[in-house]
Image (tube, rainbow, N blue to C red):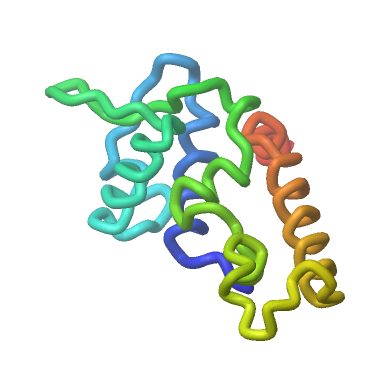
Length: 138
């Protein structure tokens, strides 16, 4: 399993915004330059983060982007799901009818993959951007 490039850029954009003083806006161009993200790609990512309620977009001459919530309330899991959708290790975990063996209730692989998916979700949810921001301050 591999998170896509958009998710990596989204992590970087949210971390950048979490380092701004509350109420300060950042222009997409500045975020793109500072984080070395192609501007067109960043704008697409910011739209996804805005739709997910992680980022707020402000239009106009003094517009820009800011976090919609406190950084301590935004987890890495939130960002992954905003960009990629829910984390699913294997399709049988969300659609048991897709199991070609029709065996999910007793399948040891299904049980193992379910446990792995739960661990991954729990770990991503345990990291919030206030904590990650604190790591960059050191």
